[in-house]
Image (tube, rainbow, N blue to C red):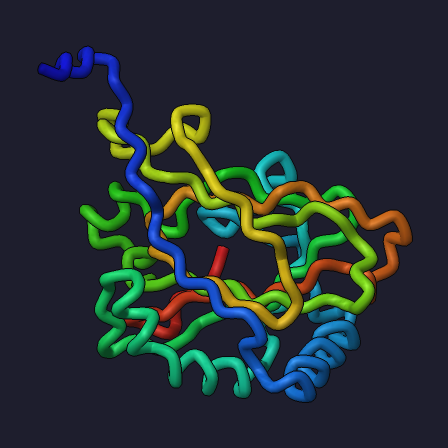
Length: 222
């Protein structure tokens, strides 16, 4: 007879992820990267966190909310069915909302959730985010290291306030492979690992289009 777990046992529940390599036609991916690398400097601003605040202890990067990527949203719409089946989430009635995010030397994003259980329970605006997606772009050969997307598994039982502590969770790292996209639930705990870019040149950065399939497409990112 197997012994029952102690009261302090922590169960690790694997986080579902849908990752697609070579997501766009190669020529399309290169054109999108070129548009990202040539984005006007006046359109870039320090990335923000909850409450529309700049907090460089939590997140350091540059963002461009008005970046256009119609070819990406068209491709995402074509894979909604497989993404729904992989994640077990209905995307009916959603539209993409996204921003271009740029990580250069020393940039990072600490562990966070795009939608917390508290926000979902309270019906807050962030709860309109149904699926998170991240599309990666960079020069070849790669001029930076690091910048992996670390996906934490759910640790059960949760804390009383419904939050997750990354120190209590197992995880898996996904490298920011050019022309790949990853989908996951907005409630999943995740982070961007610190980037090292020796040249510090803008064009050598880790470029990513981060967004959500939202019930209310007017809801923008942090």
